Amino acid sequence: MTPLESIVLGAIQGITEFLPISSSAHLIILPWFFKIEHNGVNPLTFDVMLHFGTLIAILAVYGKRFFFIMLDGLRELKQRRIKESLFLKIVVGTLPAVILGLFFKDFIEEYLRTPYVTVFTLIVVSILMIISERIFVSDRPLSYMVALLIGIAQAMALIPGTSRSGITITAGLLLGLRRKEAVDFSFLLSIPIIAGTALYESRHIDYLNTKGIELYAYGVLSSFLFGILSLKFLIQFLKKHSLDVFAVYRIVLALIILFFS
Image (cartoon, rainbow, N blue to C red; front, side):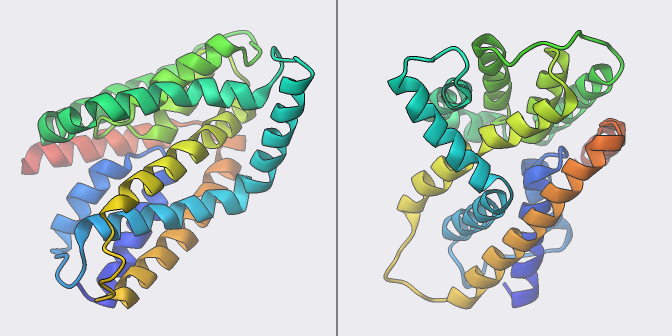
């Protein structure tokens, strides 16, 4: 792997982590297209480093707000004001992905990481995205049940081709959340998952082997920078535009994967 290839992979991770176009599909297809090999770096370690890059990116955008939500959550627990606690709703929404990840991650990696599953999920979620923009559900508050259902949707993002941001924002819209609320809750909900994934997978890192450390650094910096850009772009874009353009892109990507597979 060259420094340029490390930067390209970091950019792919940063962009697709937050845009609703599926990071798993792109991280399978684009390295193959660009003929990028992991020579000189440990693939698992490199993947973990890229996740740390996107974690820093989302903390740069939502970290301060998440920190104060945590503080408010502790005060609400102390005062037994459980019903309105956004922090506890994030906890409830995080649990499905944690449970599915712990018990079914190996099964998903072994049996569902195929081109045809990826094509199926790319298309199905695209249809749901289009539907969510065309039905009107009266404004609904972010209840614990809504948080749990969005959390279940987030857990489904473990299946390649789904897109974590795509499925959670779509679920929020279908459940009646206002657009900004659906977007914000989607990304606040992603912080514990991205952090947990990076920390859990970091057990694979060989800390004594510093070979190719500059390639890891390029990848982390690239995923961080492109992660911030894609996240801020999506937040601004969805203020005035629908998810349709991403849905069309996903369908085209699915057809390309189907053709080449």
